[in-house]
Length: 290
Image (cartoon, rainbow, N blue to C red):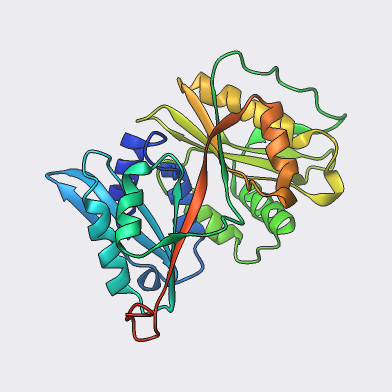
């Protein structure tokens, strides 16, 4: 996939036009289960500048980003996606603030659904930061340092999210993808030296925007303030790097309120939210009803 070209557009226009940070794209690409040829991408450029792209993250799910200066390209991305998949249904999730995409979605027959689940797009400036929190006795927070830390970090991710495909090998490979930097991949360790919580940060030095993705605490260590503490530490790390803004996109629907409340306790506020548009097809790829 043309990840670096896609990230270059995200760096240039996020968050004003788009809800996918360059680090979110890196995380999604590195953690994808499907083979690359099952998740095709297409990029539109003018000279050396990426101005639009589409990514079929699954046969039914299109991610799209278009430079607002080139809104007509949204229709070209949608036409490419409809040719590239033989799925019976296509869904496109955009940020509610990406109004330059909505007319193309309507023209291609995609209709806004009930938006459940959806993501709340939150942000906060990297000024007036919350203080670093005092941890329970024996716990400590630090970045990953070596192969043993990679194994621990992958293990706690699997425990938190029940995602067996996140192996130490896959996590190590993700660490090689721009804009990963280990100083923003923070882990909370228990008194016994086990990784029990983490907040992976992606800092895009082009835009000066840092992203939380993903974040988690092992079940037996929750309600001790670890997620809040590691999140505050990451905000300070972003600020120390010269960042101006931090973002995070937790689930926004009623069943997932606790993570959003944790981020809001760190000063994050609503910036936008996602909306999902769908279209049904016959199996042959011909639009249903046509």
